[in-house]
Amino acid sequence: MPASPLVEFRAVSKRFGDGPLVLDGVSLAAQPGEFISLIGPSGCGKSTLLRLLAGLSPVNGGSIVIDGLTPEGAAAELAFVFQEPTLLPWLTVAQNVEVPQRLRGVPAAARRATRERVLDLVRLAAKADAYPRQLSGGQKMRVSIARALALSPKILLLDEPFGALDEMTREHLNEELLAIRGQQAWTAFFVTHSVAEAVFLSDRIFILAANPGRIHAEFSVSLPRPRTADTRLARDYHDLVAQVSRILRSVEDVAATV
Amino acid sequence: MSRRALQILFPLGAGALFLLAWQVRHVSLPEDTRFLLPSPADVLRALRENRDVLTRATLNTTQGALLGFALAVVVSFVTALGLSLSGWIRASLYPYLMILQMTPIVVVAPILVLWVGAGLKSVSIITFLISFFPLVVNTTQGLVSTDRNLVELFRMQRARRWQEVFLLRVPAALPYFFTGLRIAAVLAPIGAIVGDYTAGSSAGDGGGLGFQAIIYSSQAKYPALFATAAIGCALGFVFTAAVLALSWFALHRWHDSYERADK
Image (cartoon, rainbow over all chains, first blue to last red; front, top):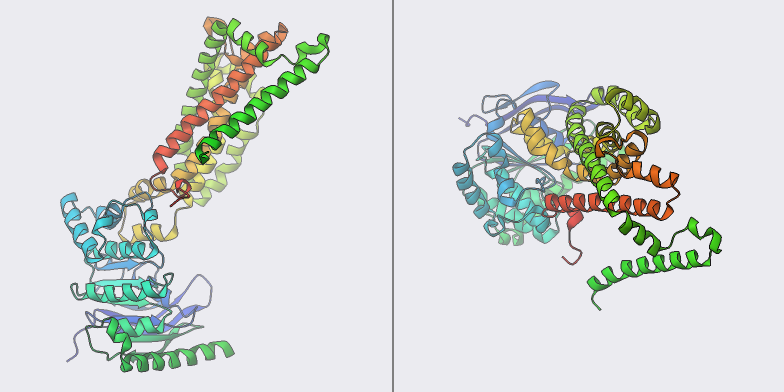
């Protein structure tokens, strides 16, 4: 018997105001601990899907169930990592990491313990008293991830978090993300434009098509874990990247001819 | 020579050149019209000779400027908080706030004298009217310009409305607030002097620089008039310097505008 899914989309559709459908009949289920990537051409609604999951916007049709709850009800189990680091520039790294807990009324001593733990996880303990503008792009993103992890979420939502970073930094952070996941068992929904990144990180990849956004294909990544920098040298990895790229290109070609 | 030394030397040099040009122009005038442009030395002498009167006038003007300025800061902040709540409130009230800004002070002054009497109260209110608008506009703009993602970060944590306002929107609006404050700091002393000119009173030691300007011009004491103008400028510089210091104190650790170029 399959385990009951942690997250389930049931024929979800979404439009903004009177606009066209952004998502049309999206159904998917994620098991606890799964790493799921969403990839597709721009305008396929992958970011919207994440925002629905985060309860930032209501669905227009169908439903989303998270651990038996609605997205609004499950807010305490979710953490969101934005495309940009989205740090409060007037707070230090340490204070930034504590913001979500502060808003939830967690006492100072507990906040401090959590903050120290997650800053260690992202290897930024030495930068605790720095201000965001003193950090590199990659470091800011790690602070942003640490802040999300400080909530001990069951589900981590990441909206193209490494899109603005250079290739090297991105690969490092991908490895780091998986290393952290080895210590904390969250389920991940990861939106990306990079096939290589999706293959490296994911258990499953959903390839979305645009206009209206819908799931075009689902792809299981059978690469063994733990995955490290060496994984990228493996033959299997390159074959999978090629396969997903081919599917993605077919979706984009369709979009181009419409 | 170090860059830093040059940064000080160049403005000083420019000032010296300006004084020199002033002196040359003064001397080049025919004797009988030299009174139209007193020399820098004449102005200095007038400053010294009138120092008691001018000191008292400066203190009075400073008091009016500070009161009006402080009132403008407090009222504009509260108003901006209200305006930031909704676009409808902004649309409904902005036109009337503009009326505050657009009504000429020389028309407002006699009305104020009628209502609260000539003197410090009127001067402070006129200062308030002049410095309020840039403050409220900038602060409101800052409060509604908060990064969308930061707002969503707060909403996802079910932040209360006051948390969103005071932990996020207000600190994010600080750079905008200080932009308004810098403009208002220049306007406040001008407002106090104009206010004093139009609604000041010398009764009870209450005369300020504006009042003194009326007296000196009626007595044809032109060097003293120039000295009064110089003090007005100096007051503007002091207000601006104080605001710049405050702004540095609040922002230099985190705001990009204080990023050192050598980083």
